[in-house]
Image (cartoon, rainbow, N blue to C red):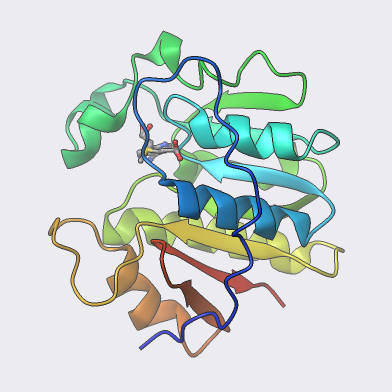
Length: 202
Ligand SMILES: C[S@@+](CC[C@H](N)C(=O)[O-])C[C@H]1O[C@@H](n2cnc3c(N)ncnc32)[C@H](O)[C@@H]1O
């Protein structure tokens, strides 16, 4: 069982909402925790799976001096074949809430093809893309490998849609993957009151 993070550090973090948004994938407490985590590190942020860009917007406004690299596959044939296809905006609308901000860069690409060498100074990766076992594993490998090589002291990977026990949505395997392959290798924590898990990368 992945241990619970002993602090609830996010109560006073504002939940920054853009003027117009239609749907929310990442609940308030989850966003607030991610914003708190972003304060614990100094360099740029990668979000894998940005959808409409609500969390991208929040991370970018909360961290005006950091770049947020927002990655999404968009409305491609590969995506249309997946269970998650209803989450993906039309390709022209990906990250629409945040793409106008000066510190947001949108990368329209399958996340397993992302090259972290294209990003400058990353110290936090938020993984919220392909939630199948193989998808979250591929995203985690790339993020861990990049962060373990980077020079910063405080580096974090956070995952969305962690669930203790099997997820009620059967194909959503973030928890199963983290328990099977990350817990024990890295100090990973679940944040109670959210569906976020995270670890500090050595
Ligand atoms: C749950 S939504 C993300 C929500 C967003 N992080 C937020 O907090 O508002 C999942 C997104 O992951 C994207 N996605 C799924 N598989 C992907 C892949 N292989 N590469 C990049 N993005 C992917 C989908 O297109 C979708 O927009």
